[in-house]
Image (cartoon, rainbow, N blue to C red; front, side):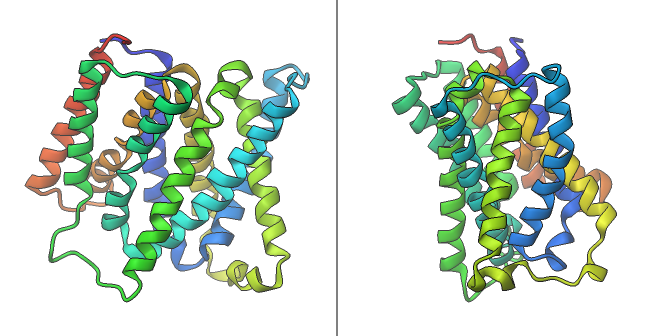
Length: 297
């Protein structure tokens, strides 16, 4: 198999994100989406800043003005706005239907990569994409009995689609910057843009209620571990996947997060794993094998 650093980081990002979701699954009951997003990213920013300095021996990277602007803008769009919308859609649609909406992420990155980065996939990679997409759909699609009806389904769908589109745009616009600059520094700048935008949003009187919560009800140790693993480590690996592999390939491998989530849920939380989910897991890992076996076109 042709397993490069970018492939390994993209798969590692999917696995650590799923682990973080398992840890953070109850946080939405005590923290509104905007507050959860601010706390998670603020904590990761505080931890990542000294690591970025150590990685370059205290030297600041030589970024151009456009690279700095793209890094900050990517954080605002892809974290401050997109993640907050994602958490909101997750609350309204539920994990199953939001998982199906999330399947649009890799096709959007494929299209954007084709148009703006001139990336191409080979036959084996297209086959891998089809298998991964089919497997993730099987895993994520809720059964008729398990669907949660909501009066706000249409609104939730629009919010979810917006969040996925912004995630795809934010990573494609950053691809060339990632290739040219240190990974930890770009991760840090992206987080800085996101946290600054969230803090600014919090000062807006109409938005203050979206940041209100009862501190005594928040499971803080769970929040810290979920932030450092599911947000911090996962984000660095996620960006590393795009730095060292084509954007389209990294996006497809990222789709395996839904499958890792199902596997961890079955092993850790003893959640039932039906035949459809097993078939989805098998399809997804077959697709990943095709992606890793393919030679770049």
